[in-house]
Image (cartoon, rainbow, N blue to C red):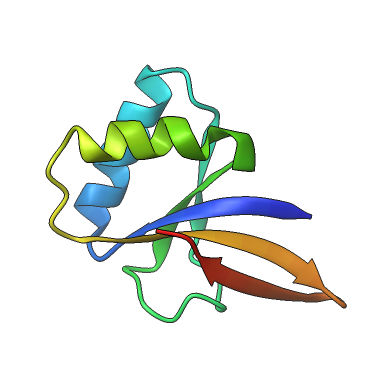
Amino acid sequence: MKYAVISFGVRTETLGFYNIMRSYGVICKLISTPRSIASSCGLSIKIDVDSISQATNILFRRNYSNFEGIYIIVDENGKEKARKIL
């Protein structure tokens, strides 16, 4: 299993970005932030890896002061590992 997670420091930005992503037709889901990501408000946005470039374009068009990162989550021997890509 491989997917991407977008993390913010505050829930209002997480929810706002989630709604914007959906308005652009990006398939996304609100999830509890995976434990493999150390910091966050506890709520993150899960997207398909193929949607990262579209998410990045949307992200940089707006001012998100509490954006923390985009992570790739992979399953390694039954344990989730996060790798920060932005």
